[in-house]
Image (cartoon, rainbow, N blue to C red; front, side, top):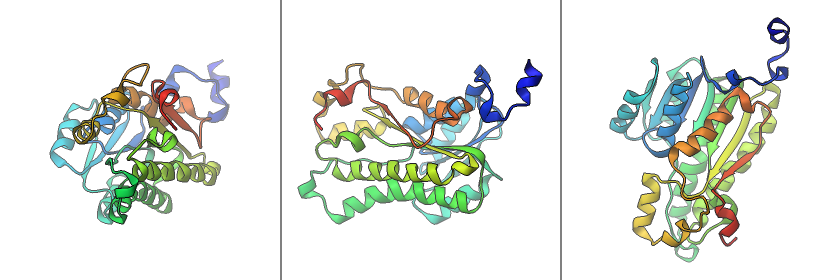
Length: 263
């Protein structure tokens, strides 16, 4: 039976537990110095992947690198919005099997007080940086056939909370672009998906809590706040062959929060 299954194309074989493994794959993780990105890097490594870690803080990247299972992992420190950083990532390894785009910023600014610089910064980091990186990976043929692209967006793109117009818009733009990517690259079986978490206990969320009282929002989540490791599990599933028929989709991971939030 095993021999017969091996004759089937990869996308036609019955699913097995091996499909959840990332053994032998090379995955680029941006925003890997803390929070969701660090959790994704750790879990991908545990599942057998070789990781290329990117983030702006070289010291924190080194700390995450030291925690990773396996070997052969690569650090490329730098701001993803800079061309030189993106080119360094293109040259770090011959090809990639997956991209976990976890880098991002957030700030609470009421729309009436938001200026052009605020909107541009949100777009530069949350939308233009990951999309430009993806474009370069495709153009330089750095993505192997069957590669999986996973972008961490936000529930804000769907429920549009107060004081988050620029942030929500930048994440919504990323989701829209990923759907186009999934369509254009389907012939190469390159998939593009998003994970849109609600409130996740990360340093970025803590900084938002310092600028505004968000306790009422946190308490709206029926299942409680997510941990970075919770999001990492979904990202790694989308990177794996177990999700090989999933593309152009956004997985809302909000613990039931979107039901209670005002739209």
